[in-house]
Length: 518
Image (cartoon, rainbow, N blue to C red; front, side, top):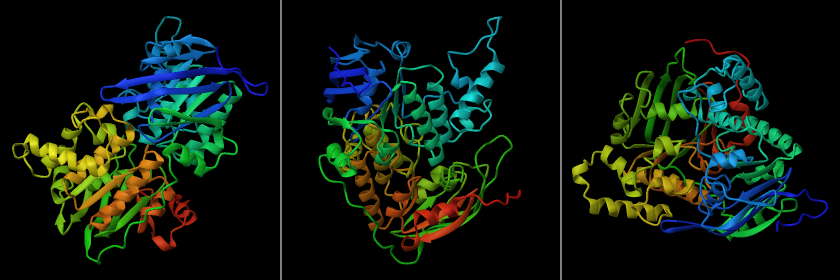
């Protein structure tokens, strides 16, 4: 029988009991359970590898449980695929994007559910009107005919959320939905979540951003190592209590990098620019100059669209036809038309979108880690299988990657462990300069501490680190110096001791005077 609700609580809409699930070499879930009530949001918490996403995928029909049961409105259900779950009123928004890049925003929003006219043809005018109205609810002002591939990661995430809202759902599962959103976009999402709760929708919400819970959470459920740990109302729960439940220990202390070494720049950027095009939505970069010394961590902060990601990519040679300026590593100038030139000079880039840009998901952990070694100048013929295994073992141990085998395909790892493999790949190439784009996006609170310590260790070893992060506390905790980007230009610079959240935000805001074309 379904769990009875107290008189003052709404009835359960979705319940999971004793869910077990194993993959080759890994027991992902061991007796997990979850209860979702109508009009309430249950935040599912836990470190990466705790089983959160696996449980959500079972509820949404992506995976089938080995044992246990799922109840929908008190009736047992077993979804064989996501289509069955969706038809029953259970929808999921995955952390990683599932949009079709070559299609327009409107086409993605209504893919498979296109409105038809009386002749049975797609009614594009109606689809556009519906898309405009839906995007306005999320606070996104963009032409629905724009191709998704032209949007930033943050804007694509908003489209992903909007697409799930085109169909009425009784249960909506959100897996890290704000991981790439700005504060304004997150606030719009939270307003929408509150409206959905008022309409009686039951919500399941996975997040590592504990500060979000006070705005939206009614209940919390904690998983650890695939097992159920606790479930309780959020009200009255402290941050420290949540951390102890999630990781089994107190929160890690703030990690700060050591003092920079000397004054000789290891990385020098002079008058770097990136031209715009009539069709592209990518921001222009204009007259960017800065340097980073050995052992220094320089943070790049700015609002969405300021050009932070594009700056790192431009330095790495990913915009060969649009970049100009000079980038030097240890006195050696990089060919801005060639990522291989950057790699061989000792530069490494850990991208924001790890799945599509940082990893080859169908390859093993070993093969992914050794990819950068080959571009660094160690030819394939010089990397024997035995040496590849030694390198992979060294850096998976160093990064504490949780994997049953070095032969495991990277797609089967949790998001946090995938990010560790990205970093391990570049560290194996012994870089001098490390460019980190949102290095803790989608990383749990325990793994964040590990990444913070690693960044500090790398700086202590003499690497120059350039860090892009949308989380101000992260920038303030790690950076020796912070550069502010606004509309493609550096609009401010702060030393660690003078940097505050208010000061950084003020410097990041666009000025009222519009930029003139160069």
